Image 1 (spheres, rainbow, N blue to C red):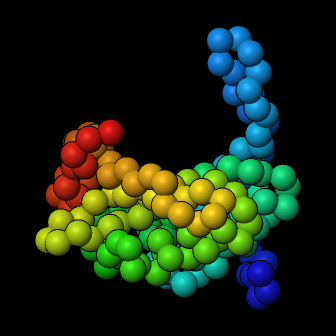
Image 2 (cartoon, one colour):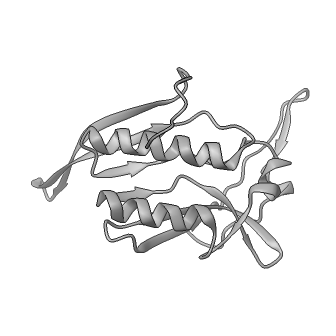
Amino acid sequence: MTGMPRDNHPSEDIIIQRVLFQKDGVEMKRVRVGIVQLRVKDDRKENLARMEHWLGETVRNGAEIVALPEMFICPYELDCFPRFAESFPQGETVTLLAHLAKQHRIYLIGGSIPECSGDRLYNSCFIFNPQGELIGLHRKIHLFDVDLGEVRFEESRVFASGASP
């Protein structure tokens, strides 16, 4: 990607790990899994550019499966989720993820994005195969609600729970 801001932050990084899949004690396949950590801002275009940059770095380092973080297109704040929500399947982020999976020929676990469906919002993860085809969609079931007195955060104020795993 050209024009990537060079103000990289310690919270942005990639981890590559070789994973061994076995069945009944027999080695089936070894793959390289990459995990991307991002610093997000209140700017969808910049967040998508950063994601695309770090995904490319992960692939250049040999990853065959790449996982993105939860809510990688927006700050993890209740008031941001509705503003950044996208429809499926025509949303900008889902379209880009499908394209990147196909372009890099990887399995791509799309972290999660705020997805609008009808009058509901979901915390949704989209998974693509190396052909850019959607092979999985998970809407978060167990929403994060916490009340620590001074700190209170309730995903359930914004998101609906997914129906099944």
